Length: 273
Image 1 (cartoon, rainbow, N blue to C red):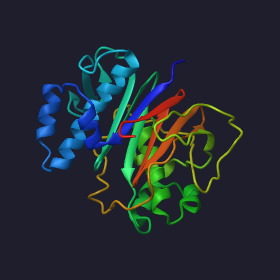
Image 2: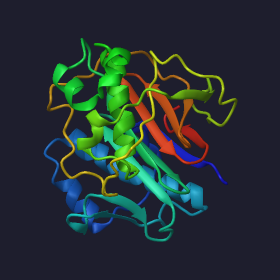
Image 3: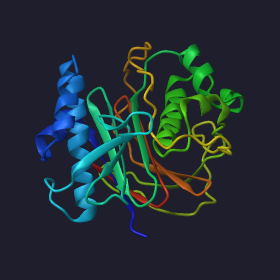
């Protein structure tokens, strides 16, 4: 099976390097953002997902048509994305202040990226996001908390969780199966027996409560909940984790942590590398 393709980079780099055309619905949605930075993040993510899908399908950037469908509200400006020309292709996108990330590949895919706030972990977010079994692993560390949040958001975008499932889903048995020090390179498979330190990574749950496959309409805004960016190092190499047949490709970029979840190996291409 062909590998999934993940692309990510700074918003300004994506806007400078990626071409494409938004639909009328997307242009209308972009115009509704009150902050210019949010508008540019939205546009960059929607252009990059076309670029990623086009690269995967062997098309030009102008050919893929992106549509979204919410199971509550139907087709429109939000909900699960898909490519009209290749409805069987799994696609997902994420944008956080100044950074965007997308994935395209076979089967179900999901991706999320968030900035890590400085200081201790937010107590309210811990109560909301972590299962009891994760508390000792994440502790009061903000980086570990947000990494857990990102993993669960990516599962939401795959259609496997809802926000209500977060404190019921214990991600504690993840294991590293590959990594790469090349910040613009790829991540593939290796020995699944090489397990990670559980204090640094978490994964897995029985997912006994399956969600509606659409992305949530009420996903909370981390910025508005008081989470702020902070310096947590430069862009790092990607690492692939395994969990119950899924693959989690993870990387960092400055204050951003990101996770793409796929059923097959995935390659990471950094747009601004």
